[in-house]
Structures are given as C-alpha cells and as structure tokens.
Length: 76
Image 1: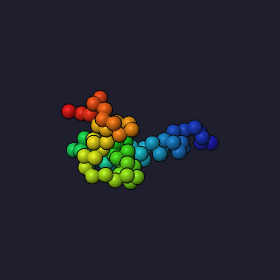
Image 2 (image 1 turned 60 degrees about the horizontal axis):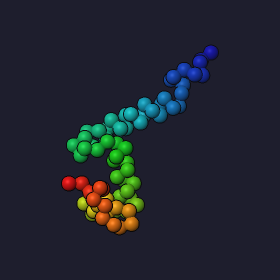
Image 3 (image 1 turned 90 degrees about the vertical axis):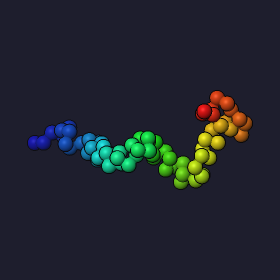
Image 4 (image 1 turned 135 degrees about the horizontal axis):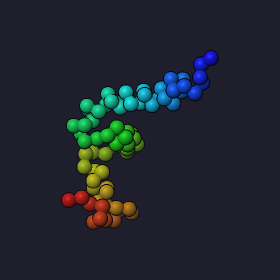
C-alpha cells in the first residue's frame, strides 16, 4: 500500500515545484530590470488597474497621502 503522506503524492509539493520552475523562467528577464517575480506581479496588477506613464508612480509617492507633498516619501 502506498503512503498517502509521501511527498510525491502531495499536491502542495507539485504546485511548489511548478511555481519554482515558472519563476526560474522569468528570472533571466527580470534580473536586468532589478525585479523579483513578486515585484513583477505587483507591477502587473498596478498597471492593469491604473496604467500610468513612466515616472508617474514616483510623483504620486512624493505627493503623499491626500495629495500633499511628503518629503519623507520622496527619493533623491
């Protein structure tokens, strides 16, 4: 009888292995951009919901909450 708790019978292990493989495919494309796969996913989500021209995110960050300039959030 096969052990139902054997690693090769666990769906979560198969999903984790598949996830690692997919992330590995993205790595050569994302590394030159200085992005990790989670950062890339966040950027895709942001772009899908509110596409902005390049540099607009930095301007928004500099404004701070409520549209007021927040010098603590601006980068040099």
